[in-house]
Length: 320
Image 1 (cartoon, rainbow, N blue to C red):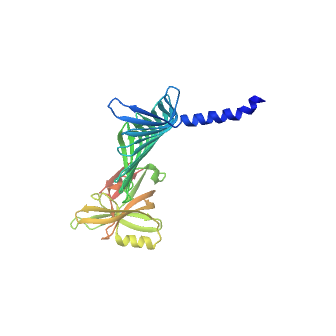
Image 2 (tube, rainbow, N blue to C red):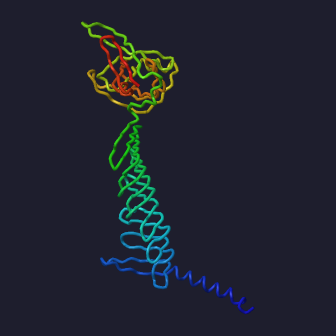
Image 3 (cartoon, helix red, strand yellow):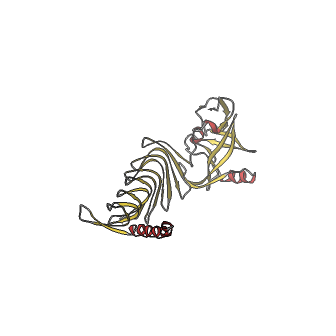
């Protein structure tokens, strides 16, 4: 009975003692003469143990300590630029977690694995400025994306996607370009021969036209091997809209330079285009804002594995 009567008093004493221990202060003098201050829990040998905060002229470390080192959940704030490392620490080394740095010109965020306070291992890095955002995701090596995907999105609407292997970009694609992709060419035949309409003669000069269908909309494009981009003339595009053809506006303005000078246009994606025996999916056109030229450019040819122009019989053979 006497033991039970005194038990609450003992528990209160132990709780008070531990609370006082976690408010201990310890001053540390570094080899360069600078001084740091620790406030928190100490063990019997005055090692940092448990929750505490270490502050000096270079950084602030807070979190759970074990034998004088961060171990478990913790945060490191670098005072020179207010960069913050936060996450899971082992033996004073950040293993996984997050990093954030904000300046007047950009913000850098990272979530993933670390080594020696560098991005190292699987992670995701986001770099944001007023004009673009760059996202890198994959495997990092000493702060550098080693294997993975890098996507840069500009405020103009341009998106560039890079495939990275061993630190080098091996493939780069933009959302304002057409690329060869067999999955975008629908049709059972290996090749399709398209007969061209011809206007003019050898004296005046011949013009070759390619007939294509966009949904129920039928029109013809000038076959122009000197044009890089395939375009829709201003008048044709107005007729296309009146016919109810759907399109996606990429909200990208582009300038092209040719014999006739500078041409301004907007980029749109049209879902279905039929030429010959093929249905082409999601093709990017330049819509001319200042003229009525509709040109079939080299980017159309790039959609196919091969294209053969036969001038003698006025035809294009498209190979899937």
